[in-house]
Amino acid sequence: MSIQIHTADVAVVGAGPSGAIVSALLNRQGHKVVVIERQHFPRFSIGESLLPQCMEFIAEAGMLDAVNNAGFQFKNGAAFTHNGNYSFFDFTDKFSPGPGTTFQVQRAAFDHLLASEAEKQGVEIRYGHALTSLAFNDNGAELQVQPDNGDAYQLNARFVLDASGFGRVLPRLLDLELPSNFPLRSAVFTHIQDNIDSAVHPSLPEHDRNKILITVHPKHEDVWFWLIPFAGGRCSLGVVGESHYFEGKDDLKACLQTFVNETTDLGPLLRNAVFDTPVQKLGGYACNVKSLWGKNFALLGNAGEFLDPVFSSGVTIAMKSASLSAPLVDRQLKGETVDWENEYAIPLKRGVDTFRHYVSGWYDGRFQDVVFFRQDKASPKISGMISSILAGYAWDTNNPFVAEPGRRLNTLVELCRD
Image 1 (cartoon, rainbow, N blue to C red):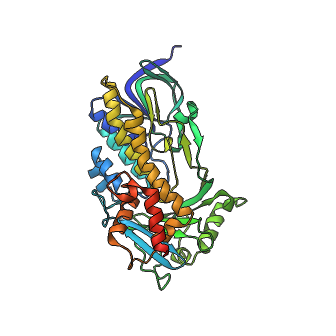
Image 2 (cartoon, rainbow, N blue to C red):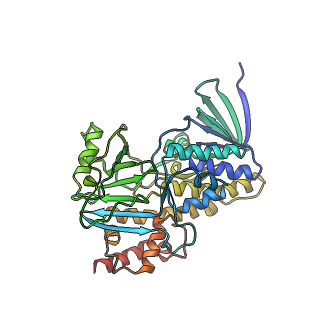
Image 3 (cartoon, rainbow, N blue to C red):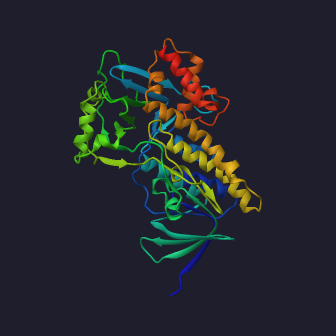
């Protein structure tokens, strides 16, 4: 029995946010796009607090009305707490142009919505189809695909985009993986019925559901919690720290509840919460690759590099990579020469490296000093520049804290500490 051969201009591996965005953009340019997705949607995923920069990419793909009308929880900023100290950034008070608000989303519904919108525009998505191997040739690539219900087939495509996220399909198949220079960290997380009690601490304001809440552990400043409110009185809750903090803690629900109850602000806030969803653990998620591109392929979002969940940058980087790569793929398919290193990898890494400086500064305490600096003494202009980065505008080199992230952050830290 001979194997069936299918054809496409572009094969996209993964139907998450970057896959949905890039496939819609390429479909708009008249290219036949086939998306192969190993799972069936809707499916659970973390990374639920979007950044305002995402809204530009969603609009670019023609999906803005669908997202705006989906009933997701409105988001306008980020709040931080540590032992009764409270600080927040309003993303509408930012330096960079562009949207200042976005949404906090349950990713099962959000990702399914984006994928469905791509399908409405003409993109073909094949759910339950796994890429098992591939080989590149002068004409593109030959992908061997195994459906979970049916016979294997070969998909011939002129270009391949890996949007598989943590699945990291092409890096594994092509031996592109590199270890991250970040310590091994883990996240223990779940969804809860929050039943939030705002009467937490006399120095803390009433809980603002329009902002993600990031709480620092009272004793271990490299351990932090996310609380992401959803519509309908539910939240995503997680704790993040180096892996040794979770060793031997096999009861993940008890582990998460114990960490939460050790805090003086998050614990009381969630004292009436109902833990009604299985608690999960994700470890060793930080990753890197030897290259973001090669002959007839490119890596998008988390398939290429993932830093850390602390500033919710993952989906923004994924969508940025989709927006950057789509016009380059279009040009290459039209016979033009594309410099993937200078037109894709270097520009994408510019924003990733900006986030990297602030993630590193968060864990070594420098950026925490900035975040918890007294707001009545803070410069509104500088606060707006920092707010822009937290809002996802990490590629805006007009912002001095993007153009020179390391030097500017260190100078700001010294000023705040003085």
